[in-house]
Image 1 (cartoon, protein in one colour):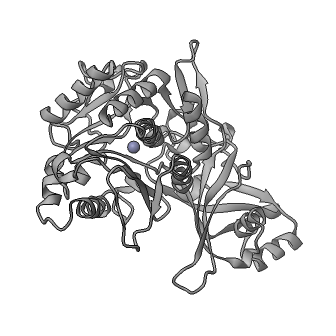
Image 2 (cartoon, protein in one colour):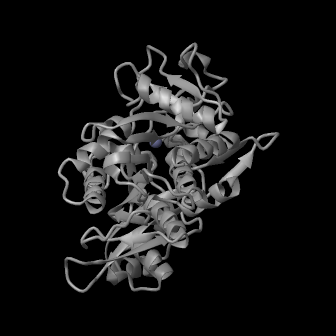
Length: 434
Ligand code: ZN
């Protein structure tokens, strides 16, 4: 199972490709794809999925009973990770024909982990469709090292190891090659280097590309590491490890009937605050739960509210593992370790949705699944991050818990997590879906 996770991480080099990977697995397992524009025929026991913007996906198995009576069991996660997005008109032409790319930071990454690595480009391009309202979307992944962000030599900044403030606009521009004057002229006529190489990869003409959403990604593949193979390291572990664990569990339990309607919801744009139509701030989940409830329970106006009251949500987003070099950053009694099992996240000021009730449910599920469980609470003088749980509860008054696997170097170009923890998360998610 860990090899499957490694393969999925390597394929899912951006939000769009993560959703594509998930959809492929759902198709293979016989889930029916729904289109939000159609009217739906939803049947008890049926398996369905819906995507939003190609970058969020909601997979669900309708319960054998009405959601009004048994509610929804939902695991949420996110498809996006901090990276660099390539701006339009990206090419900056320099000395000797060197071409750099103008990029914008997406989310809050650790910038210097992106230097001096082979980088590739993935995302989606839009080409002309039947009419202006329906451009054709094509996903793309160049899958080869096409650029790098070279660091300044230490000889020009002897204090670099004393702390080095970075500007995205100045310091983080990747170099994509150097070209002859004629070649640069040709690129310019075709809309630039990026459009030209992406078009060539897709076998289309660069002039056909109306627009794109492309990002850089580190090409280094995910790997198992540690003297006893206890860790795995990859880009995008936050939060694809949880997204894939929820899908893995849903697929594994799809052979068993359950009264509750089970759902894995993978949102986009968590790293920028979730405020998009495919993010957790949008009414996408609420609308979906309403539609499914009314399709199964008929026109009963109470049904949706009863379904919400009978539901439980696990907001699954990775947590900070205790770091042996920085003990002072952690809470003295609640610092989860890699290998210690799934982590329940608690915050007194409600940045997490976990309360005593939600934590008790999750801990009981862990116990039944035979899985250890630990707590993360911030050091009282350190402001922590936030996640999906309380964003969703602002529009859906669900019971639930915020949890995740403990990882190191969150938002680095290479994060590290525990193999056993991942397997334990899948186990407890399977118990939740049983
Ligand atoms: Zn996250």
